[in-house]
Amino acid sequence: MVALGSLPPECDVLLVGGALRDRLLERPVHDFDAVVAHDGAAAAERVAELLETRAIRLGGDRFAAYRIEGAGFRLDLWDRQGMSLDADLRRRDLTVNSMALRLSAAELLDPHGGLDDLAHRRLRATSEASFADDPLRVLRLARFVVELPSFAVDPKTVALARAAAPGLERVAAERIREELRAIFDAPRAAVGLGLLVELEVYPGLWSDSEEPASDDEVARLERLAQTIAHIEAELGRRCVDRFVATQATLFSRFREPVERLRAVRQRRLLSNRDAAAIESLLGWPRLPSSIEERRWFLHNCGDLWPTVAAHLGSASPAADWRSERSALIELARSEAQAIFAPPPLLDGHEIASLLGLAPGPRLGELASDLRRAQIEGRVTTRDAAVDWLERKAKS
Image (cartoon, rainbow, N blue to C red):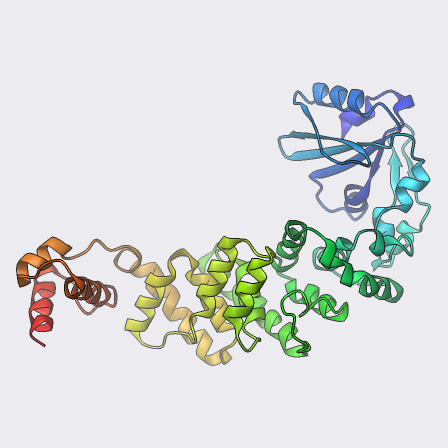
């Protein structure tokens, strides 16, 4: 951030947190965190002016913070307001996030051994109180494991996080929901789940029963990741809602998955949209096996069909899934217009006139049955629809 370097030395501006960690790991960085010793408002306004944007005051009682956004970046600037730099770094979660780069002197400050932990791909708590101070960091630890390939968690840090996990009950549901989406919307979600099992967070956040987790859940998420990769490779785009698919896989292990899902939604740990999508996945017991079933499956799932197929495929024998995957993808490609949103062959008024029916349940039933026959490919023309209705009405 060149603009930060233009601030006067007395501001004592430092780059901190995940942005510095990722720069040291040579990972792309778009979100930056910086701290200044004082006069945060003036510093934020100066940086915003240089970047030709504006600074927005963020909420918070403990620290003054300002957000500056532009094309391809976001900067959060924090005012330490008298807190020493040592205290500021000590309050952070992990040592790899507890380093600082003083921009005025290009000086790296590493009081907690973060560089050594980066070199050894180790996630280690900055202090004994790291997780007790903010139990949400228990979930963030799982997110870091997912986001940072080849990193492992220090055993003592696992113990500290496990001890703090019950404190998640006091954390706002929206904050938990955001972290869960970050964990389970990633290709390495199975790694995150494995840590949540070790931390005794799963299945506790999903269920208040005493039923323990098993290795099968992690194995199923691993299979799900492979299934998603195959689907997206064949379709040539990202089309699976990984979060919805992984959650459906996790809820399906409970005796009453839909009831458990609804209970979690009531606790606001899932958005209404996600809960509805997950419930729709749980409603499909198996992959379709006939051409008519495949067409109806695709129509009912709509844009969600790759997600439903991935969820069902991860629980199916590999040979069955390979053949069904190819059949579904070919149908979706070749007959999309006829399957997903085909214009009706006859509308309700035409059906009523043809059969001499008044509006009512019988008319609705015939219209619905004709629609299904059209989608399944059993009736494809207007004349065929008339013949089908006349036979249906007589039966």
